[in-house]
Image (cartoon, rainbow, N blue to C red; front, side, top):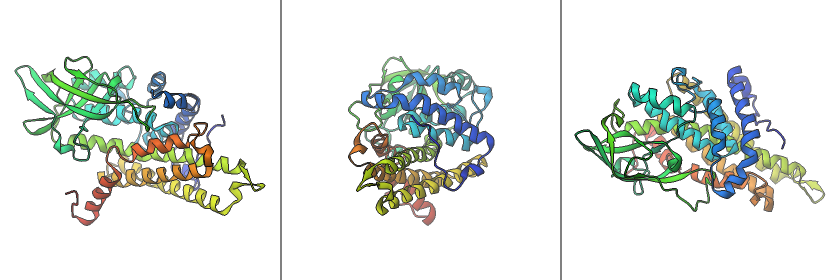
Length: 389
């Protein structure tokens, strides 16, 4: 298999530091060597390649932006974004695993957990010895997480949790779940460990998308947790939403990777596929599609890079993250569909990555804020008028 050379029409490498380029190249080689040779098998089987987790941990993919004192890599946000980009070039499910572990499990423990919780969980999660999941979405509450019905009740020695969560990445393989529940009407986070009586995580089957990813329900039936299981530093819906901002930032970069994979496959195919005695790359309509692809990839790269720089300067706003997630995933899905068209009937074969990316992106454009919800987030920001209800 030929090594991926990257898509960089405007010499964006010149805007990256040497360390950032090294991180990207390291992850790029990992994806080429460890992910791409096995991902189609796992996509067919509907399984996640768990055997790559130790290598991902060793390279510092988990909690990459968190401090070394907790066993993390201490990368800047641009480097972390490049990690997400390359992982999703391999598969959205691989990026989702790292994104959930980092942004939705390690980040809330780091930001809202006690020192004891941080010391116990973060090094183990960074080493991949423990896997985490994030329980916010419910069967009846996705875009409106504030309507959650999962409840926590205070007891003499801790809390009792009751409720259900839905569409939970890593749920069935997780050692710990960050579960969000209402305590006296206010949202709080709780760390619920695998094996706790009343807690189960049945895997959801029958997916046509994100097949190389574990997706689960979480069921909490009178689950008793200790008093020290609550995340003590803050409460309210702003806590899980801040975690989602971290994850959406990674998604914005990841979508660029999926788009690059589809564009690269379409470009190489168009140069070698002969019709009417000429490669189809010589036809105007094919060239127009390829030009559109590389243009949108370049714009998405610039958007992601600037957002990363703002994030490193602590100046990124969640509305800006919504803009990037909305734009990049939308155009990545558009590029995947156009690439499938260039490949013709061959585009539906798993000899090529295009159909897999297209199917995955149908989930990515919906999860962690639908395309429409991000439209309304940005719309409120620029007009000052909320249009959610």
